[in-house]
Image (tube, rainbow, N blue to C red; front, side):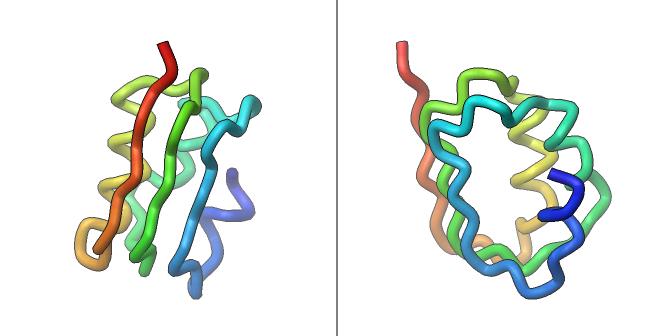
Length: 72
């Protein structure tokens, strides 16, 4: 996720059902300010609420739509 966290023109991000995304990867979004407007994080089983918070916090100023669900 390091490469994605450095993209300055990232407005749409869909990591739904990505099996390799982890909290460690989402930590690269901590303390960043990104222009993400649409974020989809469905069924990402290897992350916790803390990891998701890093991702959401980086785009709170621009986020318009958040799609998030977990599979049980």
